[in-house]
Image (cartoon, rainbow, N blue to C red):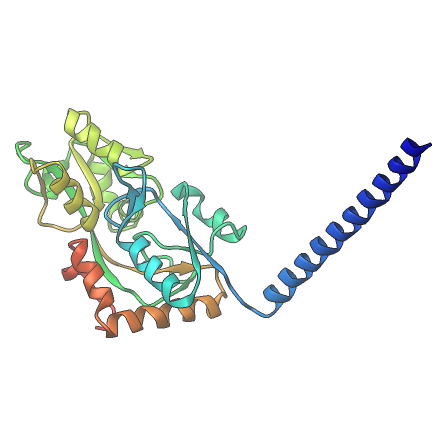
Length: 273
């Protein structure tokens, strides 16, 4: 009999606990909804290509670092947000943004030719598309690339420039144009002699050359000139304005320039100019 009474008491206690737990869960969910409806933001998820130094990449310690990620971290610090660094496949960036997986694309993201596809901050870095070749290859001009094998990243600005009307003649002069998933792989093929040149962003090109201790040169003639901005889902003016205003505050107090100097990009900064 005592066992039955004890079992009943335990069952009642468990039911009360479950009801209390459900009430707490519902209360927490309601608080979350209220917070979201109030427009409060606690996290900021940046989508970036993890193979795009110096703007965003994984270092030798397995940490995601880079110029753009440092800028984003400072913005989050000032806004009281938690920064979420979300590496993405570059050719899937639009899906990631439209699905809400990321809040923005911030990783050496070219505005030119994409002006109407995203809601953009003002440009903050000037960038150009260039060709990198081995120093000993004997390639000095774009004309020397005729009959050569050239590498480029998929869905990149360099590829867009080569596919543009004024770039098709140059592209058609190549023996082959190979698209790579990332520039690290392209450079490995350049180093191995599997390709003769890589078309890429000048900031990334300078980083790759320096990190390899030289041996490569950038052709003087640029493929295209462009600017970088932070891209948000089309119509997301509120979040764009918050980030943009914070970037200008960072520029005003010298923080932006200090971060640019740390990454060797001082000469590329155009924010506020």
